[in-house]
Image (cartoon, rainbow, N blue to C red; front, side, top):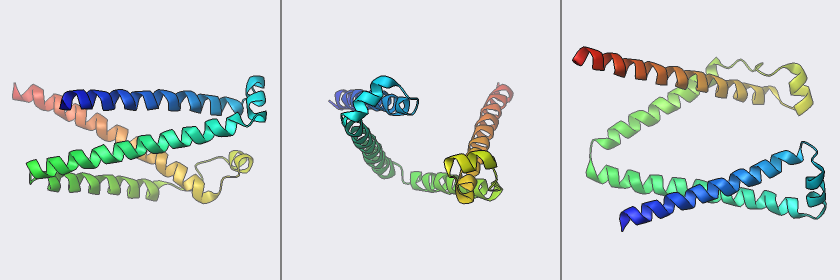
Length: 156
């Protein structure tokens, strides 16, 4: 029964993801000046599509959080040492976010782009922090993969 439930939840999640993707594409295409979407927007249907997209994204996020909490609660009951590992992982993620924010200079977006899109310096700093975070995580993933593969070579 659990396998069927997991499969059903996975298919439901994929369905919501597909609907969200289609709605996001429709929403993004409006900024490109597509004539058909201008007619849809005039009818007010565009606003409905936008809010349906927001609702689907909220449902998807709520489902992710709910099932994450359920799985973690089960894991905490099964393995008492898992809480320590989980807290270490959370501390590492927080450290990466803080280091990324500190490395960001605040001028990561060109002045022309900042003026065009009405981006403040604090928003530019957040954009730079997100870029730094991606760099750190990609490098960390590459190093961990290399370490694992090299360790396997020496164990043989």
